[in-house]
Length: 456
Image 1 (cartoon, rainbow, N blue to C red):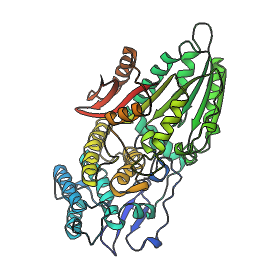
Image 2: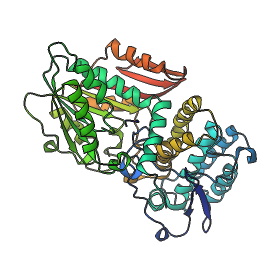
Image 3: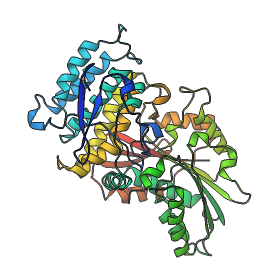
Image 4: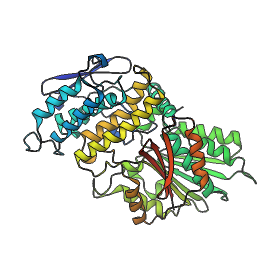
């Protein structure tokens, strides 16, 4: 199991996994149902493209089969890059001199005949980029995104989609494997361990960890896990955090490992010191897998929850803090630069997915891309301000921020690299791993995709 639209007055049809249809109507926003979905990887619930909970996306016209396109995949992406400058004004003000709406709409019509959710990787990505551009054009991004009428899959369907993506992409296994090696080395001699996980998902990361420590010479340590998890995540699991706690408790009991679980059902930006229930004598470990970029920073709000949370973690004097993030720059970038970065990053990701599942009309792959990837793309393209929660940063920026907040980088042992290389043997040969700048980089061909680092 996986751990975890057209111009005004028109409408565009979209297809769900089970070929039910719904409409993104471009009339007034009051006519929409708010898309405040319970999916834990929705834009509104602060989860990422690689999150172990799925997300809803919006498909291009299903009647556009690859056989009907009047252009190549390369031409399709060239068209998206020509549309983006037409919407360069971040607020997409129709009266702005920076917004060439007629030209943008003309290019969108052309692109709509070239993209397909069942086409080549670049055509599939083009379909989702187009929906982001349409959303940005229609309601300046955030307002139309909130107004989209959408349907969520059941939790069982969502878990199936997530499981597919987990199997064909190494991103989450890269995060879990690298972090677990680092943590195990950091607590090697500790008798009481308190793990604070800000993205527990299904708890799958900690099953092999518990099993490994069960065989420690001299007996296993006491393990306590506190997981921070917003209430929306319950939908994907089909229940609250108690499901995760019960699962891990069964594993611990079967291994005869003393274990305790504490769930904090809240968004990470709401966490305070008392939430974490710190106890004397415990070695503290903090885990941030693909989640810290969702915390608003100084560019979003004066509270700057990103740095506030990091300073709180630093005050705990953790044995180690693990950070895994997408290697992409979409936080403070202006719209056009962010668009180009999104295009480049997800081109590599869709190529990786295609290498594992090359069948063009594979319904499972299409659904996995829809519910676990596409919505995040729409968020980065269509939304601004607090409504844009996909705010990735490059490792160099994370490094600077962490050091300013008092953290010191921890050197990674060769064991971390070896374990990740062994993991990648199960995936396409174009995936690679490299240690540089004090972090472990996961890449696809010549594009860095994610980094794993350790701090104290």
